[in-house]
Image 1 (cartoon, rainbow, N blue to C red):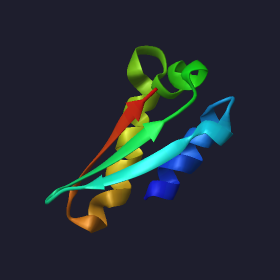
Image 2: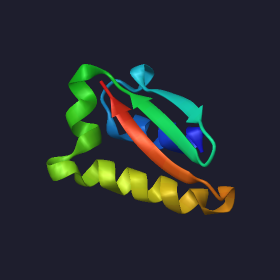
Image 3: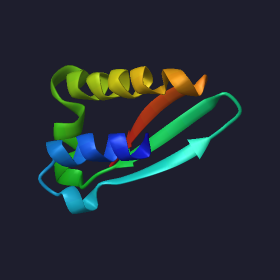
Length: 76
């Protein structure tokens, strides 16, 4: 799942070498912290958060098999 977030993010940004994904697991929650270059933060969020919402939807759909809640936090 971490690789899925990284591949999608790297395709969207101008500085793919600065994309980092960190996984934080709790009891029934998995958080993927996505950090990108400060110049690329707008490209990851998108207009009115549409790209960020789509990224979260894809990750949530792919995580159905995990039986856990999954979320993506975007860090600059």
